[in-house]
Length: 123
Length: 123
DNA sequence: CAACAACCTGGAGTGCGCTCCAGGTCAAGT
DNA sequence: ACTTGACCTGGAGCGCACTCCAGGTTGTTG
Image (cartoon, rainbow over all chains, first blue to last red; front, side, top):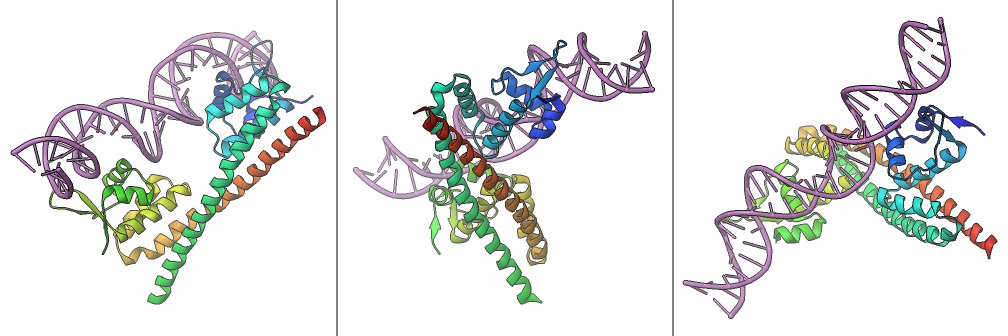
């Protein structure tokens, strides 16, 4: 069982030390081990969970909804159906987001092409 | 030349009335026509510009950078090369963003599939 | 065992992008 | 003329997700 220091966990998860502490404070991270002196020690499981949090944040889930999800996970196996519902709902949002982003990417490329035609006409 | 009221412009651009006023205040919108009584009147050109602003916002460009871009547009045709550079730089960011989003979408689907296998195993 | 970096806590502060408000003006309908 | 709703201005306030800080503790290294 590999153990990671806070800064290793930060580096591997992409969250800052302050963000990790903040996530613990608001309940996104629970049962993080401590040394006798009170310093946090992260396990592989913790890193996996951080990876999921990273995924949810990167896909635009608000912190409040992540807290609801974390709460479900803490509440045990009886909540798996609810977790799936929450994640599927979120996945639909991600799909919409992706469609918008692709559409606007096209818009952006069109605008660039338009400017480049302007430049070509001028040369 | 069709003219639009502020609320029509808001509705067609997807920005709120307050946001339109805010954008004018910070220089993202300039030379918006007014009635003698001081009310704004938006033209088709304005709507087109708002569409571009919408595109840049939706793809995550910060307001400050949009202001720089708007400034270039105001400064005339000599700045087209710079505009292209700015937009291409942004387009690279969008590409990166898209790759991340797709990767995390996969992660999300994997997690959902994992939970669904859990549920199936339980049934 | 001394020094030093990494870590701890609670709480205040920050940056962004709006959003809301008070108090007034304008213009179309009756 | 009067009501009503859309609009105006300047400026304050808000929600989010961190980020920073002061002041103190820990634990590894030479």
